[in-house]
Amino acid sequence: MPVSEATPTAPTASTTGGAPLAILQQVFGYPAFRGQQQDIIQHVSAGGDALVLMPTGGGKSLCYQVPAIVRHRREQGVAIVVSPLIALMHDQVGALEEAGVHAAFLNSTLTLDDTQKIEREMMSGRLVLLYAAPERITTPRMLAQLDSLHERGLLSLFAIDEAHCVSQWGHDFREDYLGLNVLHERWPDVPRIALTATADDLTRADIITRLQLQTARVFISSFDRPNIRYSIVEKDEARKQLLRFLRDEHEGDAGIVYCQSRKKVEETAAWLNDEGLTALPYHAGLDADVRKRHQDRFLREDGIVMVATIAFGMGIDKPDVRFVAHLDLPKNIESYYQETGRAGRDGAPADAWMAYGLADVVNQRRMIDESPAEEEFKRGQRSKLDALLALAEAHDCRRVRLLAYFGEESSPCGNCDNCLNPPATWDATEASRKALSCIYRFHQNRGQRFGAGHLIDVLRGKVTDKVTQYGHEQLSTFGIGADLSETQWRGVLRQLIALGHLRTEGEYNTLELTPSAREVLKGEVALLLRVPSEAPKRGRTGRVAKAGGGREKPAPIALDDDGQRRYAALKAWRAEVAREHNLPAYVVFHDATLAEMARDQPGSLDELGGISGVGAKKLEAYGREILRVLGEAG
Image (tube, rainbow, N blue to C red; front, side, top):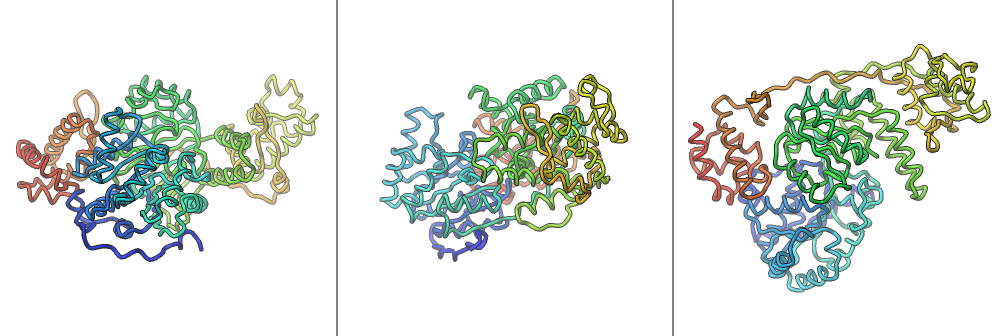
C-alpha cells in the first residue's frame, strides 16, 4: 500500500478531560483550528499514531501540544517530545509556561539540581510536556524512568519532531534518531506522532519503516507557502547581488544568509557589517557560547542578519524572518525547502532568494562523487541534485516545480520571479555542440583535459599564455564561440553538467564528456536556456521613518495613525516583559496579536480575551497592563 494511503480509522475519542477546541481557545487563544490540525489532534488525543507532514509555519507544534494537554487532563500523565535542538526546547517551553502549561526540558545546559528537580516533576506526572534530545531518551536512566511512568499509567504520548532526521534519504540525517524505534518496541500502547516539514516519498517511507509507523495515519498538508516569493539569479558578483537585494528589498529586516563553508560565513558576515548591516556569523566551528549568544540576539533583537551554514536554523520559531538568502547551492530540494521555509512563519510576505553558478554545480557533483557512501545512495543524491538544478534553471513557475517535487499539483503562482518577470530564452543547442566538440578536440590532443575557464577562452578566441602554451589557437574550435559572452558560456556548461552530458574530474575540476554527450553532438538533444536577468525591484510599503535613518517594521495589518501609535506602545511594553522573562518578544505575543489589539482597542478584559492569541493565562497575567497601555496611547 502506498505511504499516502496508510490511513486507518482513528480511535474513538474520549469526551472527558477537555475538548481540543476548548483547549485551543482557552490556553492558546486561537478561535479555530487550521487545515488538518483538528483531525490530527483528535486522532492522537484518542490514542492513534500519526505521521504529520506540514510546512514550517503551518502549526505543527499544536498538533502534539493540544493532545498532550487533553491526555494530561484525563490523568494520562506526561508527553515526551523528542527535539534535536536546545534553543528550540527553551523557547517552546517558555511559550508553554507563558500560556499556563507546565512544561520543561532536559538537556546539557541544566545543573544537576535542576535536572533532578525536573525528573521529580516528570515522575510525579505533574508535567504536561517534557522536551529532550533523542540521545537522552535512549539512555538506560531515561528508559527506566519511562518504564516506571508507563507502569503507573502516566506516559501519555511521544512526539518526534524533525522526524526526517531518522532517514538516510533525508537532508539532515542524525544517527541518534535511529534509536527511537525503542519507543514502539518498549511501549507499543503509547501513541506516537512524528512530524516534519520536509520529506519526499522515499524519505516518508524510510521514516515509517525506521520508526515502525506502518499502522500510523499519515497526514500530508499542502507544501505551498504562498507568502514566500522564490527568486533565483545567476551569480554575477554574488556579494554585490546580495547587498542590492538586502538594501532594495529588506532594509532593517531580520533574515538568514546561508553559505556552504565556515570560512565564507565569517567573511560574509564581516563584509556585511562593513557595509553597515548588523550581521552575525553562525557555524559549528564557533564556540558554543558564541553560537548561543548570536542565536539569542537573532531571536530577541530586530533587524539581525544571521550568516550561517546549515548548522543554524532547524526549529527556529522566529516568526518575522523576512528573507532567507542562499549564496551557495543547497544539496537538494528538501534542504532548500526546509531552509527557505524559515522565512515568513507569521504569514506576512517574505523572500527566498538564491544566487548560483557553474562552480556550485561542479562542487555539489564533486562532493557526491567523492563521498564514501555506497553507489545506490550516490545515485539517489545525484537525482535529488538534478531536481534542484532543474528548479534553478527553470523558465516557468518556480512554485509549480517545487510543489511537484513533493507530489502536489498546482497552477502558476504569479508571485515568483519567473511569473512576475518571465525570462527571455535562447536556443543553446548549437552552442552546446560547439563546447562539446572543443572538449573532444582537447582529448584528441594527447588526452588533454581542462577546466571551464580555459575552455571558454578557446571558444571565445581569447589568446592567453595557457592557450598558446598548448597550441590551442590552432584548433578548429578556436574562436567559434566569439559571439557569446563568458556569462552565456558558463550558463551553457552549467546546463550540460546539470543534464549529465558533462562531468568534472579531479582536483582541478577538468571537464569530461559522458556517454550521453554523443546525443548532443549529433543534434538529437535541444537546450533552451534562460537569458540572465535580475528580478525587478519590489517597492516597500507601510514603512515609518525613524530618527537616525533607520526604519520601523510595519504592522502586519493596516492601521491608521492612532492605531500605529497604540501598536508602537504595545511593542515597547512587550519588549520590557520579554526582557524580564528572558524570552523572545514573540513568545509573549506575536506581532499580529498586538496589531489586532491596536486596531480593535478593546476596553475590557472580556473584549481583550476575544483577540486571537490571548489565552486565559495571558489574559490573567497581562490583561490589565495591556488595557492600561492602550488607554495611555489613546
